Length: 271
Image 1: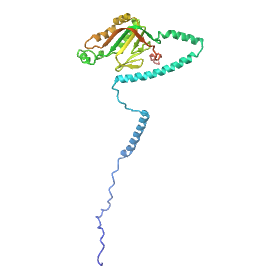
Image 2 (image 1 turned 30 degrees about the vertical axis):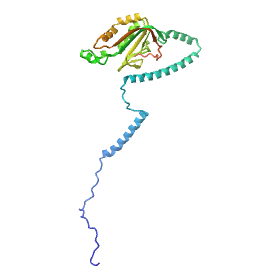
Image 3 (image 1 turned 90 degrees about the horizontal axis):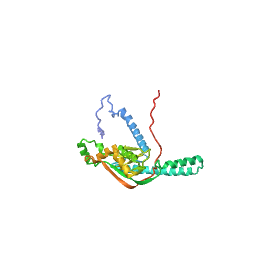
Image 4 (image 1 turned 45 degrees about the vertical axis):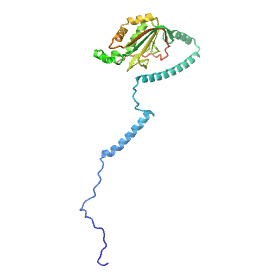
């Protein structure tokens, strides 16, 4: 057709001269650098945690059962002690194969010292003493009467006082919680338990001694520290646990733990 033009798109509004397309905002430099650094550090922490945990939980649940924790620690100690016995048997077997006059003399001397050192079992008449914490209900009464709360629990010095009094009374063997007490035995408070030779034991604490019951009882009755403890046992606002009985046969097993003697050494200052 003449005089007609093909329709086409209408031209849009013309851009002002010198105008440019808007640019996307750029992230700050700290963000662009910090993101990969944080990711790298996180990965490193995961690797370190996995290596340290060795497949175990790095945040185990808290122990709420103290008695169960003490039993678990005691079981671990029993396992280690059994290993010690096995190694000691091997040492004894190797020693028996040695034929030497000095060695024979040393063995004879050791045999003489084993009993007084507590390395031989003992049994016979004696006494049994049980110490235990006061009832929980007595705490409010004790505080109301201006009594210190620590008087309601058994401390290491209470156990030590009883043991020392039994030695004074002529005891030939003493046990605490069934464990033989020797010259290197350490008694130490550890939280709500008492450690005996590094092993925790919960209360009540049973102390037994082999010896003349009358002499042992007299020594207990005359000891001032034990008398103070027994006064708290008779105090109705405290009532800390105390029980003593004469026994026809007390069994004190031989000590079978470590015999290493550790002691403190004074520090010296270099002049």
